[in-house]
Image 1 (cartoon, rainbow, N blue to C red):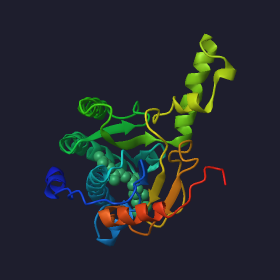
Image 2: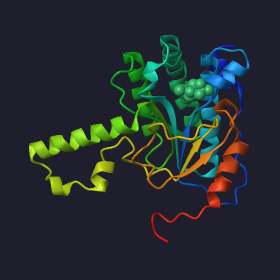
Image 3: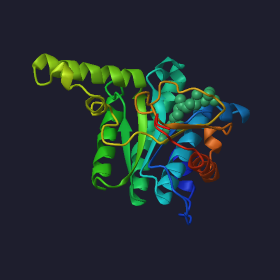
Image 4: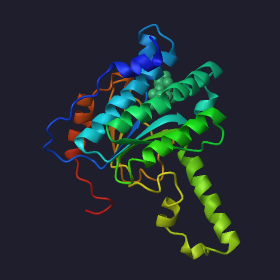
Length: 253
Ligand code: FPP
């Protein structure tokens, strides 16, 4: 089946009647694609392709239930170390799917954004990301946002913010005492959005893997054994229900 056909094939779920609070910002480490494909005797790239479809379904569902920001880890600064064949397959997936996803999600009122250091990406993908940005801009600043982190690393992001601030100090526009937590946050890729309330990691792994290091200081984590390609709207409901049972104290009592 052609990849675009695969993505067009599934209808997005209808908005359910919601009578519970939802987090403002949910982030996901989309893990388990490789194992999901292996269990079916398929190449890892197939798991990523089905994982990309899950992204579209879950991002649209989040918008339907009132989640304002949905952010996923699609390709880390460390993922370049994977076999060339797998890196190429992921780049092909971005190439074939990014703009298509942005257009179909636009029709449902979801603005797709890409976060990360985009400079090492192939030029045609960077050009597509610029088009995706234009589509998102046309939805206006209040649209629900689904962000894909590509060539993203939490430490790399903080390093880039420190470099930018150092340049401002060097230029004399900022003094070291002016550097605050807010000014650091304003130099991160997520400058325009609140920190994630809930971070979900499927596939049974229990670590953060360099995802949203600064932003996750007070995030609640939810871990599940479900592999990302199998992650359903019911799994999202379970994660949100679990989140709603927690008492967030942000360091207070
Ligand atoms: C981790 O699973 C997943 C990735 C490294 C890639 C995630 C990317 C996508 C789902 C593609 C998204 C693209 C678009 C355009 C929405 P893994 O390979 O580490 O799985 P494993 O732990 O089972 O090996």
